[in-house]
Amino acid sequence: MPTNKTLASVALGSVLLALGTSAQAACLSDTQVADFAAAQAARTPAADIENLSEADAACTRAKLNVLHARNLGEVVGYKAGLTNPAVQKRFNYDQPVWGVLYQRMLLDSGAVVDAAFGARPLFEADMLVRVKSADIQKAKTPAEVLANIDQVIPFIELPDLAVQTPPKLNGPGVAAINVGARLGVRGLPVDVPTTTDGQAWMLESLRDMRVVMKDGQGKELATGKGSDILEHPLNAVVWLAGALAKEGIALKPGDLISLGSFSPLLPPKAGQTVVVTYEGLSRTQPVVVSFK
Image 1 (cartoon, helix red, strand yellow):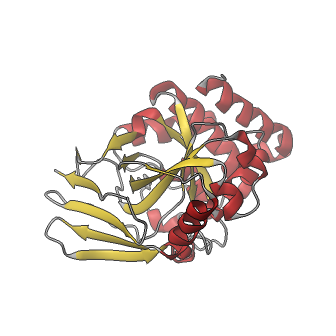
Image 2 (image 1 turned 90 degrees about the vertical axis):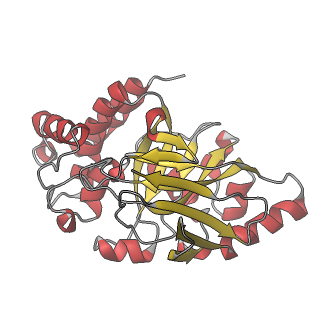
């Protein structure tokens, strides 16, 4: 199995070959990327990242992920970001972006996290799925994705926009910072049915479910529905597989995929508990995080 460093180096190499030397100047320098990573580790806002092209963003993300691979453990999967039109609007962009998930980013439901877990910490209702087969690379529909995953997992993502002025981030800027991947809290997995009827039920349930985020006292913080993500949340996997393939990366059995936000991105407060439920998707248990 390729190591983290190998995966990141391959991604960086493919980006640089595609860009050519003329475009490399706009990619953040090694020093700038190291400064960003140091600020992120210290939970202090990094210098703003503005006016990157998509190619510049891919180059910068690859450099950043070489550093992440040294510090955050094994690559455990990938995240699709800006998959919700409302979130796209916030960042003035009209398509998804992607980042890498690492072992030390993932916590279990019930985790207690510092409210200042990052420089610009946020939380959102999300969901993970786990890859069952490498054939997922060929999936073109939600049904084909479902046939190639074996778990859906409740998930509260805890991203960090990390820069001094987050409103200046656009889509490529978000991609450049690895889509703000910082932490996430996963709940109990639900197995994907293997029967035709069971898969049809889950496919409809994922599309039609109501995702509800409440505080510890039961006050509703935000809601969304499955179809808020690209009309069906598993369409995020179709997009992600294609985007990764362009950079020579293939999804593997066991990889986790974060589908994106079913809710607005909200700032955490010390003493706050957040509970996310998936109404209409039976057998799912709430996923919970508390902030101190």
